[in-house]
Image 1 (cartoon, rainbow, N blue to C red):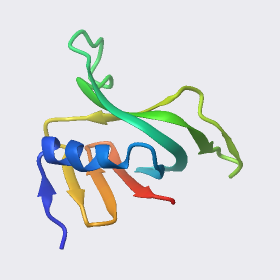
Image 2: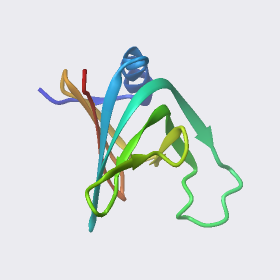
Image 3: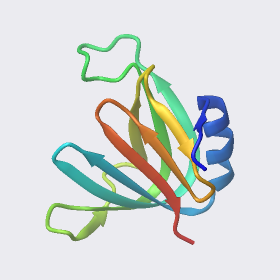
Amino acid sequence: MDHYLTIEKFNKLLTKWNGRTVRVSKQEIDDYDETIMNLEAVSYESNPHRLDEYTPLYSLQLNGTGQVENSAHNMEELPSAVYEIPLEDSSLYQFDGSRFSLTTDRGIYTIELMD
């Protein structure tokens, strides 16, 4: 049964996956991509001095190394050791026992274990 979590509960559950390999899927209006990464740490960033509303006020940062699927469906190294997910006050956090879902105004992000 899906239920919504507070960001604190979401964070507590997600940090239990540190040291594991995860797949992060992003589904936006006309964009879908997958990233496979070794999750080393979960952190958050606040950006109170953002220049426009496209820059998120807060972001969830999945720290670790990994690969992202490019538009040609080939895997390439992540450009940095951080996968950033923009957060909003209206973001919804779910965990169904095997996968996390994070729904924002921009899209749906899914985080699941690979190992």
